[in-house]
Image 1 (tube, rainbow, N blue to C red):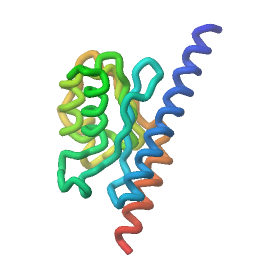
Image 2 (image 1 turned 60 degrees about the horizontal axis):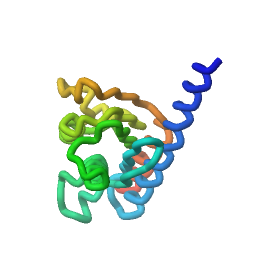
Image 3 (image 1 turned 120 degrees about the horizontal axis):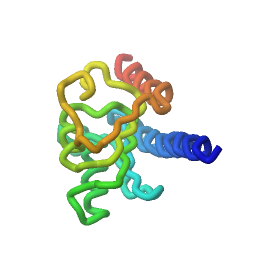
Length: 154
């Protein structure tokens, strides 16, 4: 019975934190950025919030994950994110996956898979101790992306 409670609790936490990442993605969409949001959590506390800033900063590396990694590292005063979980609304690209591997983050939880540019379709691997979980609030993440690009095509 205790094991069921722990499993249910972890699942609810992933949903709660992914909803927080979705709020960041909505901020990106409002700023006319591709709506990807990310947060970093350690010990059930959000230590970094970020969203895509590639247009605003005129920087192709300013993905939500990169912004979140930098913010979390500053918050922890460490280049490593050991014990942390990244929640991101879209599967990380290979650039972000490389940064996540170097950060030694414990977990990566993403919403929608990225069939074109996601790292899982490549030979890129994260740190050996990093676990990955996908498709958490996938439909909500996809809906934001679809609405954003539908508006762009008008």
